[in-house]
Length: 349
Image (cartoon, rainbow, N blue to C red; front, side):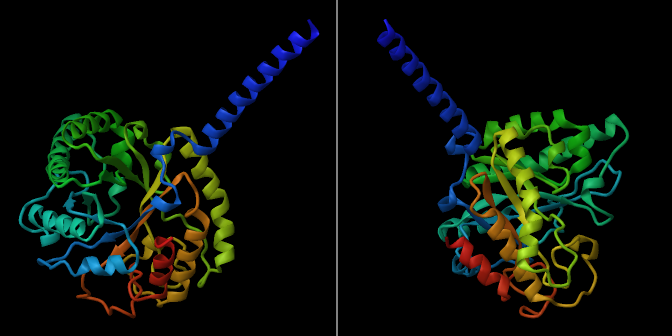
């Protein structure tokens, strides 16, 4: 009798251990492995600045040289604050923002073995797009119809060209908070046409306000977290600051059951590059390539090995330099700077 009881106790303990192990694994891996990108499958991308005029495929070689496996193509539309209208396809866009240009760039990327994120992005010249707001319900209906037409135009192109990833919007903070049901129905319409992966680009400080992550494949965000106001921040100090941010991101990824993707990330090559660079977007600043390189290095050291972190798209990459010195500038681009070598190193792992 005693031996029989011991046998059943042993079976129960084995069962309990198996259940605990499965639960622990679930917590560690966040969700089913197929939803996550292991280190060998990280999205190592750049955000391509749309070329004003038609270009050949030589730009893809530069991306191959830095071991990029993805490129974000960004056809802009425009809005005016407090006006229920989305302007696009009116003949005023760069060639690389037109349907024709985007299609050619997709084909060029695919022929070079690069995957594509198509990221239609609404821009406003007066302030930040996240502050865009409307008061009247009838105005919201007009704007939403316009926005859906804009998005679905490129969704159909993405479906026809087998684009791997589509971003349904960027930093539309107030629209997302005030109109969550609109986004759910928009995603439903997109999925009728497009079968690739979907994300949305929240801002670094409002991603928790997005109510529809469960309808998407990635928690996308602009990863411009303010880290240090030092002129040339030290890598070790930046890594330390990343610590609690990384923990918060991990916990949110666990909660939502989705991997996190930085649909944008990067640092200007200027003094205090890891601070609030967007506040000085159009200001002349002292060039500081080392500061930019340190910020990139700390970013990769902090996040790149994390299973819940799917990768990101460096902001930004030019097919040609028309308005700035290609080697000496305080722009966001890492091209021809020490930061480029750091990207190449980590994208190649």
